[in-house]
Length: 328
Image (cartoon, rainbow, N blue to C red):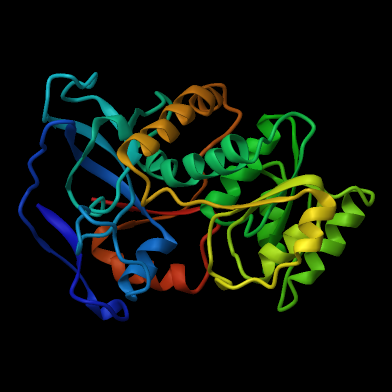
């Protein structure tokens, strides 16, 4: 099979497409003929040597999400059949023509979605739903902050807020991405340059001084601190990414006085069961929203896997609004 491989850590010159052995599923797994995947920031960080894959995952083939067809069953207990169209999550290895994953990490592709569209769904919507709803308690009438609202997870979070009759306040480094996010349901937002503290003041104005109920922070660092400052009493800040830094000066007095919660979350390193639970919650709560047309994949562009180096360059330049999809 053809696969994207990393020959060590470094810049895009370590990325190649070459032939690799086709994997064989073991008990509890299915093999998927991958039609499309998407590039994530984690793939770029892994290439740079800053985000190693978990034990047991493919160590040199990246890729965290997929859309394709069931090709081979590794056991009889799976509810899937050969030929079923599925999307799902992987610990790695999804940037290849074939991929073996636990059957419980797959979900049926909604009938209206193409493979290209479906490839833009798993990491974005499962992450956003898990962070905002399962952990953050987002519901009707909630006020949410979504940092980096033009990213794949950010665009999913904005749409979920609208679908659940909540309202979302977003951040971006460009006014153009904020405006595009408004079309997805963003209520208001602010462009952030080098001063994330502007977020807390903008949210206080937006909320009439009340603050937000939940924040999905995709950046970390000072952004997480600004989200905490912008919270209403009993607010929840869910930190999903650390692109802006892993350190945060934290005021425990603020946490105590407002009874705030701050949590870190990640999907990739969860156990098989934990990840299966996240997928099941997505199937229960989010798939019906796709079927009703209340949320949709946001595809920035589609590239063949042969252009994987150019895709990495686009990701590092911050170009995508939504997901950058790769197809065989």
